Length: 336
Image 1 (cartoon, rainbow, N blue to C red):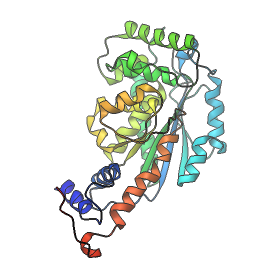
Image 2 (image 1 turned 90 degrees about the vertical axis):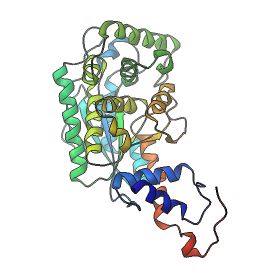
Image 3 (image 1 turned 180 degrees about the vertical axis):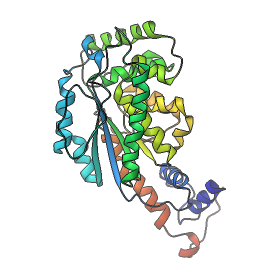
Image 4 (image 1 turned 135 degrees about the horizontal axis):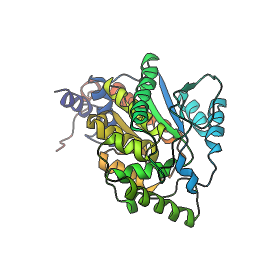
């Protein structure tokens, strides 16, 4: 059995059994994804930042106006954002996906135009989108994954950008059965009053839109175009045995949609980090995904996911390059 062969390889390396902790689990998962005992190092790395606007911003739940979404997309494309800095540090490309920003961007290198609409509707007044558009978002996300596959990217991070996206993420998680009080938190810094309003908005949305009959229903009622595209992206990457590294709370909420469509996707997902947004760890625990980093970050953009690339690569270097007990003529200890 492949997993046993991988563990045998790890246990034969010149170190006490299990002494490299979670690095060994990462190495096992990468080897299982690739279907080989000794995994290959990634040839090409990339982060796909999915951007979209959210109609729920009308309710005053964010510290920033929605125009900031488009402004940040321009910053990504110019190479000036945190995700660009960290991506240069780890040797990753950056692609920005316009899933539904309320702005028409000119053609630009690194920009993928996959716009479903110019922002979702306010889900306190109506469904965020039609069911048809929700399915379209999933399909568009799969097309973005094909972009990565065609470019032979073999280590992929997903990021997000969109004012109001943590409110949408909270609504999605609550719709899937998580307790609102365990999930609700700030994304950007907001006042106590704004956080209370955010909680009331999500609670009211649950009253309006429940029950939720399936993942597409959740997406259409309280989701976002970027969330649907991330879900489709994850589904297609998993279908092609490509590892996807999640970022923070919004991307993990989007992963919930993919997971509830096909639970096997979790075998191809890594949690790049644990966000300071409290609901993130709640979802990660349910998905049984251990975060690689814990740096009190809550920026988004894919920053935590990209920073974890170096740790994933270190785990692969370890299983590929460490000397075995036999090769080094080292006597094994009597380990249990």
